[in-house]
Length: 299
Ligand code: ATP
Ligand code: MN
Ligand code: MN
Image 1 (cartoon, rainbow, N blue to C red):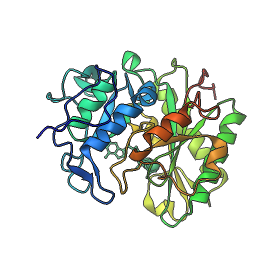
Image 2 (tube, rainbow, N blue to C red):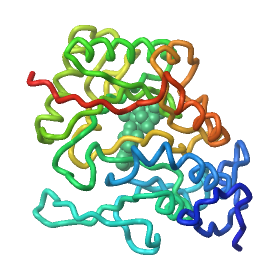
Image 3 (cartoon, rainbow, N blue to C red):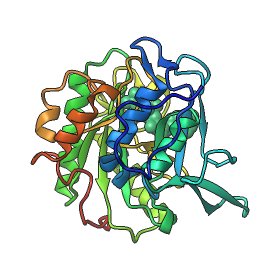
């Protein structure tokens, strides 16, 4: 049941046949698999600088987001030529192929296979032992206002700036904000994880009523969990501009710091906003988002 996509961009390399394009995969808001493919084709130019050449973990929901979804990080064949494999050493000494993409064609072949979300490592395929971004994933306890999350993100930004690090904010399309710190690769995963852990724990210790740095739900009561665990080897965080398999087809969206102050939630952008997101990305306040040439401090 192939269906041609209406607004397919002219790029011949991206053109990927989407089967069951009229299948509704976001039942609450009505978007189809074809709509999602159109979104990714449109957004690819601004998403690929983040999502390309990075080991990925896909959230696949072949029957739509309301049915069974699963994470997939290995290419078990069948995706197509745009989905590549990078061999990565496992803890047990063996080697596994992790999947990655390089272009819009790769993204769309993943969508063809029922992918809704793209999550990525904090390292690139060319140097998987050298992390090049740090993510602080702010997870509010139920019942906290988004205002609390905003404030937390801005506080992280300030504390990072105090140690010389530029950071960027992304609303996840869910409940929280990711504070992203681009880093020039060079340091090890151990140094990366250890820095993230110490930074999160210092904040939690300084303001235990607002923050926790431990995963336990119990300790989260009324607090924001500063999830630093995204920064270990093998962990992933949702990629900028990834769609989310959540109500109303939201997307993870980079935002400017001054803009964050006025946002009322983390899921205000959806897959219908490709054009808006493309226009925004070129704006003065968002251009350069997520990139900075800076080293992990020696602390
Ligand atoms: P929200 O703002 O609603 O918290 P989120 O994307 O930050 O959205 P989390 O549940 O905090 O969602 O997860 C953070 C990240 O951890 C995800 O973006 C994902 O990359 C990763 N993750 C979470 N659960 C799994 C899982 N079961 N398998 C692999 N990765 C996961
Ligand atoms: Mn989160
Ligand atoms: Mn989390």
